[in-house]
Image 1 (cartoon, rainbow, N blue to C red):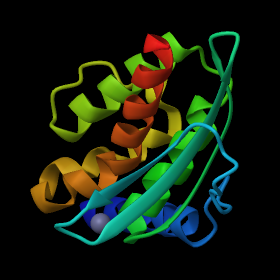
Image 2: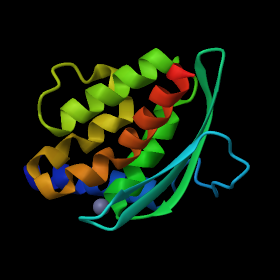
Image 3: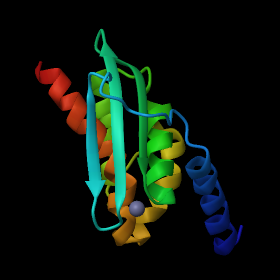
Image 4: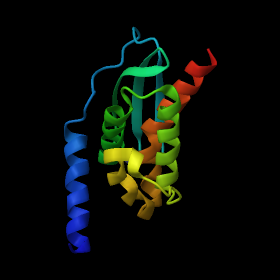
Length: 146
Ligand code: ZN
């Protein structure tokens, strides 16, 4: 497959996620565990809400407004994280963050999130890709301390 085609495939997949994000519905004041994160360099905003019970991520949803990469990344993250233990969720977020810097060795645990490995080539977009994952890390770290 030519590089151009690979790029197109990646773009189409990211666009599909961005246009119809999974677990995308409004975060309201009734959501007990939530955070808002901004990526000022691009203008991306994400509100993320998480429900943790018995040490596991039971549910997660988000809303917000941002570029295709930030929305696709958040969507893929919700699919990956629901059902994980808090410990594995934090480990996955750390692996994802390393991947965007080209430092992760084993991407097999990341599932569809591997599609975003291409942002390594676009340093300006790394914060778009990691925004939701940083939001989740912040929320889960708080939860663990409670
Ligand atoms: Zn962005």
